[in-house]
Length: 297
Image (cartoon, rainbow, N blue to C red; front, side):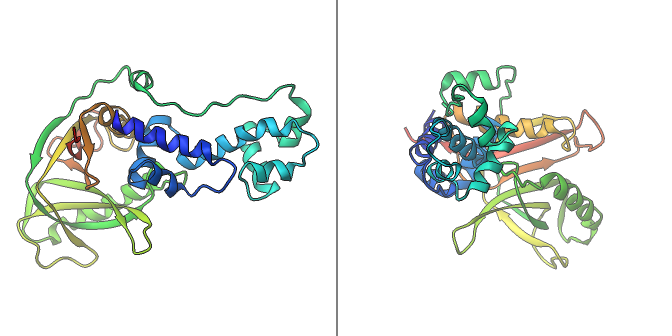
């Protein structure tokens, strides 16, 4: 429940600051969580990006103010945390299909759009038909070589994973023979969140293979090391280029992780593509593992 409490702290912070600019990173900071993981868990819980949620809550906050016809649309926009009449109108119309002026003329009472409330009942209803339990075990340290790219995850409205990853794997697989000292039979997808010098967090994905030692790294490839680490590893059956795979990952972040006695270490997530993987088969098996450690008592 500690993750749920942290997410709720972020939600409450949004509510307290709807009338002023809210940097998204300030929400996760208030919740005492990594910004990327806060966004990832929030999206898994709500199927809505954090940015979209803040926008919809600001619009909801503006509803009552719109009924005061002495105030201009610009006044309402500014009071609701928008920078201009145009940005407010654009966001309002995207959400409801009509402009704030139209709403002011048509509506007899304000619409009520409630803030999110996360508790155990919400969590139980969220994935009531799923019961995926992981294998908890310690993976030994690995040396990996492969191709690494920056991606935008599904927690963002600008996600490009569906476009980038198939092309990445198509470019990597024919080059396996170029890599020295490979431990054959298994490939890995490594998902890391890295912070640049300005404190901005970026998401990276690496298609790679394990090697016994890193030497003669092919052009355009990089090497990385995973330390020995405890993981919660989930089995996904089916193709990975479908929404089913995204739902499996969302289940991990929005249900299992939040009800377990574990916490994410913020280390890399690991996809394992072994002999049971066949990208064309509905019976294909891939394993998705998140690095975990027990919650402090």
